Length: 373
Image 1 (cartoon, rainbow, N blue to C red):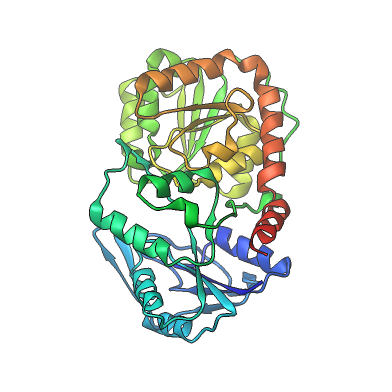
Image 2 (tube, rainbow, N blue to C red):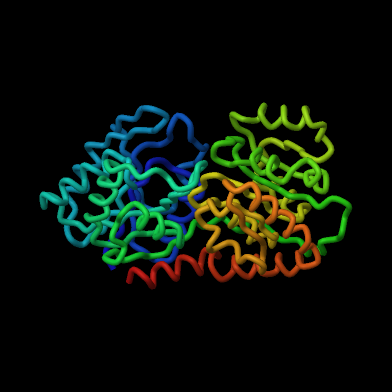
């Protein structure tokens, strides 16, 4: 197996856990970080927690442009130029300037190492399938044509997205590596799913409506259905006032609770008090929330725009899915879920099985190593 070089934009807890586990499993890796943090995304991480080999580009140029974080890393590019055929570099995804430059250099035979790419592409958004841009699709096809290693994907959605964007997927070697969670922080109580008057639906999410679609979901199911349940929304974000106004205007304070940010231990307690995990996103590449829901054994009601719904939700077995752009489908899926309350314990058990089969760190990483060996 070649030595794997992962190129990541910043240091994050969930990726740190993954890279540490790969190292623990004996995989020869090094992570090149483009920078420590971005203006809109940063975590307090102790460098001693990084148990994997890494290098941080301390001379990178980073700025925001049109709502996107831009990274320019000439030194990182020079380091990759110096690697031989014994290395495989996981380049950043499309949209990253460094990735485009690296691919041009690859085509010019300046770079000798092989390229892989980590791809969580999702072509579904607030208005359904993304518009097809000839320029963007050209860039996507060009960069994927430079991949002579693996396309590392979390599941089915990126394959569909690449095909939608015009990429010839038949020539790509895919290796599945789902997002994994630090699962010792989440535990499942022996839930009995008692028939309380109003079941609790929990939604851990950033409060950004154009991404998470929470208000859209409430409007689709209607006030009468909202009052059949209690909805816990865990998180903060720019649209908090939008949700508060909806609750106030419709006198829904007894039914919708905006709980704000919670740490992982507080979230674990809430998961174990709740009955169903709800994630109604318009756009979500591969949300950790659904994986957490399988870990704690919750039934799941989720949007089919969540990239990993294929792997996390088995309709009729551990939950239901819906199209967030179709109000009738949203309402019907919610009502179907409510009519299946006597099956929720079975649904929760199936969620836990799915976690153990697909997302448990040792299982997921062992499967990934087998695919790339």
